[in-house]
Length: 234
Length: 136
Image (tube, rainbow over all chains, first blue to last red; front, side, top):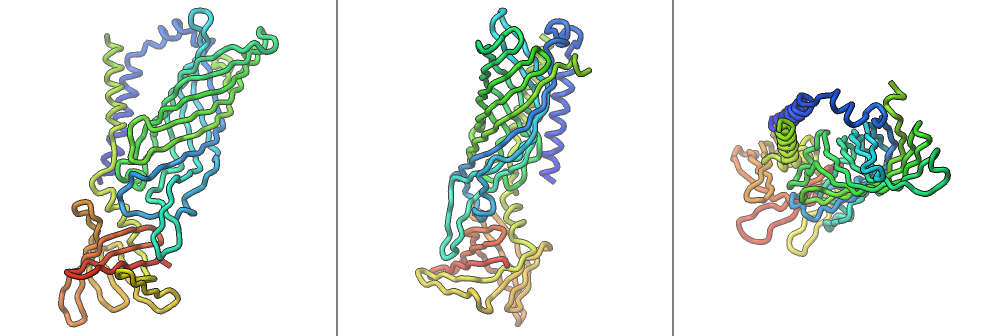
């Protein structure tokens, strides 16, 4: 019953967030002010995800067979959203994006425990390895002096991003205050702009819990994606 | 100003959602889900430094069912609850013996998982016995 109440509260607050955000937006003003027709792109990406989990703060007497839950690989996911590319002061390139990520992550558990006379190794925590996040990113783009810069543009990209879990967190992941929803990431990457038709990009994101958690988690992601201007699509 | 208030409300809403965490029953719910509807077979019992192994032998077993009932290989039946008392996880078992007497036994949960269970039987005096079960 309490879990249901929690879900309802989450959905209600998201609805409130959406209504308040959209109610005060004057679409036309924003469209003309920021040249959305030219600078707004739709993007999609394939992602590879891995998380490492430190369950040293768990006090609940739970055990999970280490070999069953530990899987230190990068697993595929996907991502999609909108991004706005702009120039500040005629020389500083940047992009701001909002995306939904479906994360499927391999998980490395940093700690192993044993309980003799049982011979197996255990962890005390089982992390959710499939979840959905809402991602907001702001990237600075440095134009690289490569090739013919009037036609093909190469950028080095860096900046912060924020991931917020919007999917339900399992009860096992909530144990002892471990259920932290927000990750802050440092992003690095490279982008190739083909005459403004499309942008191909590769980003690496290293994320950690924004708020303190009894189970500090590090999220590593590689993104390979493509963005196309909205005006060319619709 | 209106946009500022909108931002404030949106930030507040996001913060409220971010604060949603576990409930007081989360831990017992998880332990219950691991314990129930399974038959647990005793593999080892450890008292002090003495370890007895029952692996590969006909051994004691106990079943905790979803409806809160418990029955074991000795023919005892009763009810059980998983509780968290002063930070200690425990199984409280109320059983009726074969001659009709009602007794309560409390086990401290040392560790519980999908396939391994370690309990410590509470005793009035002396060294408690740790019981190592496997779900087969």
